[in-house]
Image (cartoon, rainbow, N blue to C red; front, side):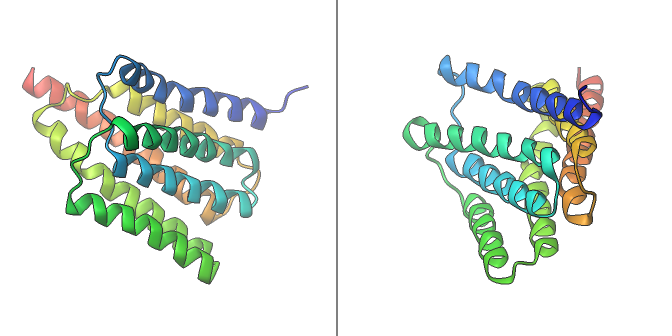
Length: 192
């Protein structure tokens, strides 16, 4: 008999994969031009999320971070060859911040500080999307962010151990993605 945590894991991973399918289709159609530093930063941060959650006993609930890290880094690989080459100071700040988190964790082994920093940097990396969507709410697919929110919500149910380290980062991703979906839907009604 399949247990509920396994069901939550599968649902989390299905939604996590669904987030990327439209983006991969747009890459294949040569419509999307991914930005190297955005995707490598998200790949590193979700990789850190996987390591931290796994080491704290997150079990299957950690797998969504691994999936997202692999998919983000594969897009970063494509971006290296054919993606956006305009790299700004802010891009460097987020990229270096992700590297600093890895270094902090390697030297201190302090999972709590590392997971908070990863969540904060991920949130700040989201702010330009909020800003852009204030005036152009139709440019971002709300469904993508809704699926992302669901993937991390179900990953919370799949966790094998509950602690600050295993709960904090995925919880912030659920909240941020849900807030963004609501924000976009409201702005679409206002702007029409």
